[in-house]
Length: 335
Image 1 (cartoon, rainbow, N blue to C red):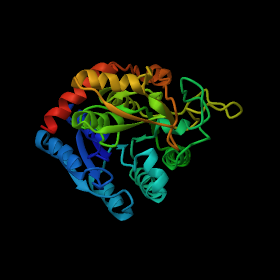
Image 2 (image 1 turned 135 degrees about the vertical axis):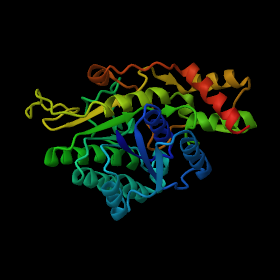
Image 3 (image 1 turned 180 degrees about the vertical axis):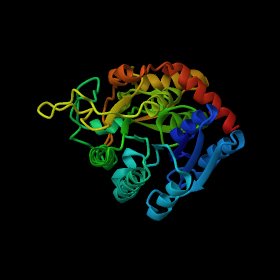
Image 4 (image 1 turned 90 degrees about the vertical axis):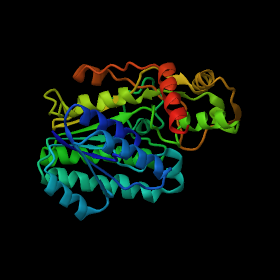
């Protein structure tokens, strides 16, 4: 297939691109290489793809560039699209809400319009576990309400799911939204916990640990995230023949639309996560314990039964192994 991967210089985008390329697909990547975090890391991810795969091409482009996006679709004639480009980060969305509307709403609309205009077979896009917001049931199920987001980031991701449903209904565009649960692993994002904690422990700096380390997170290793994305990409959304408007499912539709959780389904307390990092590094952390941050949720726990039933998805990498692989990469990358 020829696949467009947006956010190809990002953490998940790079890994998805590498998987598709390794199996023989042609991948066109786009990314605006913004400075939300170190652009050098993004450039190095791209260099990895460019140096290892002949079937990869890249365009520096922003999703908000309506005419450029439309022209790219017209020129390349993609079959499927994986939309991973977004302004990420819960805490940053409190300080810079407008950037989330630009990237995650306006940019996503441009992708939907181009998919509609060019008969794309399947659009798979990143949602987020943050859409569960104030929901306190456990584990989080795609059948539950997600009407109470706690950050602009979460609100824009919920909006993406609604926008996608509209295009699936009006234009029969198959769309699948994926609610990722705390992805981590090699080439990860520097603003995420594992990256920040590893750096702080190695340098002897004091690191801030919110909610006094009592967070529970469904940490999901990048290989398991990629597996879920590929399984859904290869199985385009179809109408649910059992969908009933009087008792509507929140995860399916009478139109070709789906949402799934992708997680490890084994929540780990943040303090235990930190102890695994300490064990691998052979060095103790200096911690400043702080209360829960605004916009954060104390616990995440994914119910992946719907994804497992429809695609056979099964996460395989536990936290100890995942942390070990990340730190091996980190030590090599930063020498």
